Image (cartoon, rainbow, N blue to C red; front, side):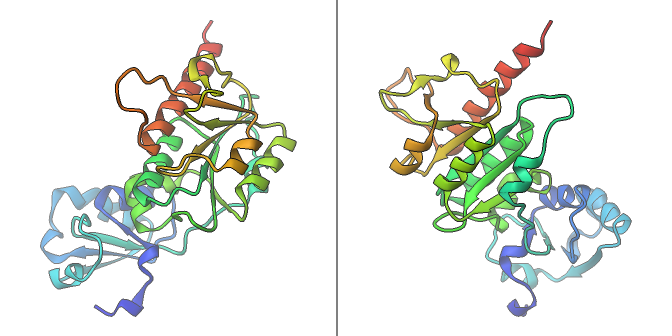
Length: 256
């Protein structure tokens, strides 16, 4: 395989992730499938959808996949255009026609692509309006993130910003409240926090948490109750807990 044919960051790998990218309307350049899987029932939906979208399908010998750096490819990869980030302005300009409060997720220099992908997946699942991550010292939307997101990156608007603290200041001027995930003594327990207004949840880096500059910009800090001996959760798990608490509070408001 000639590695110059494509950038590995533009690869989507795994059957489900490719199928979701096709369903989401991504303009895939090509889908490569292992020859020995061309009649596999698990691939029928993907191949049919590729045909509907006029996406070229190429059947490849197994050595093609053996040279890939991804082990969980399931004999299927797709070549996508570079990920289309939106701008912070685009995220802030979007409003719900029914007046529902917005929810954004901000990642403060998370470097593990599996964590970033899992957070993207959860954010899309709870109906978040978008996600922000920094341009430097952070995992971007690469092949591993797309795989971990299981197709959610095709639906969730994602922005990259030069400076997280400055982006937070812009959001605050737009009327969005900023809640930082933190386990310190000044943080309030999540059930006592108000997640029912226009909100951005800020998740800190693995092992380090929020940077001091970002923490100072937050309107309030929230903590997840921990009753066991372990002091903290994985970043993607903590993000999921907080996002679903926000969803719970918002759903409660809508109930008669």
